[in-house]
Image 1 (cartoon, protein in one colour):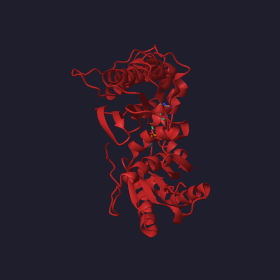
Image 2 (tube, protein in one colour):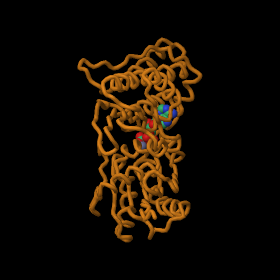
Image 3 (cartoon, rainbow, N blue to C red):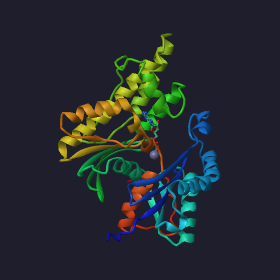
Length: 339
Ligand code: KG4
Ligand code: ZN
């Protein structure tokens, strides 16, 4: 008889502008994943307004938790642990999820697990692809991070490269804002770029003197802004679709170049993508083509697990649970937490 007990974890994610709760069984089995988005609220401001975000989290956190437990058919008393994102993110937003998690952990007398948001994005891959083999190369591209990591196995990783200034998603958001396209920038630029010519403008790519796997996107951002100003001064037409397509292509050129460089260096069995930018179909398609010639499979989470959600926090939290990597009740949010 198999007496192994199932491990139920309630996970909360409130690092930015989504209030999310999920219930996971044994890590990768997602019993529920509820996400309440605030996009409509922040859209008119062209970015997330931290004070508004935390107030909305306060309003939604309890109903979202109740909904996730109800959808999973799990009672609070059955939970083995409560996990919550402890950083990186907006401090006021993180505090809401973390405070709720601490309260539940204390009341239910179960361990509290503080999960790094970025690690969550990576584990979203293992939810979608439990068959995925290590060692694995991981590119994390979100609004706050651009990291290239090497996982020998699921328990540890090495940082191969990271951005020296803006994150890739941040560059999308800033350019979308500059071109008055709306927020968040990635999806609107992806959509507009389909109508444009990616060869229309030859934007510069960051070059480093050392043999690094780091990234840099702030020079590209300046180049796009300068280009538009110059066109305006010359009274020439500004074709936003061409700019979007050319900008997007340049970002992807830089990302793909380093992934291929790293894949040549390390012996990996697969490559995974994480973070909001990984939702971009053009990017996935281009990278997949490049990796096919190296016989390396590319994995990325299902679309619903690419953007912020709590299922990924529950999955990462499960491996911390197995390692007994628990947090004390005085755990504080860390807005600048890194991997
Ligand atoms: O991972 P995520 O949802 O949140 C964090 O930053 O943690 O990523 C959001 C970022 C934003 O910068 C957004 O513009 C970008 O991911 N993004 C995209 C796409 N969808 C979201 N970037 C390019 N193409 C997309 N389709
Ligand atoms: Zn995120």
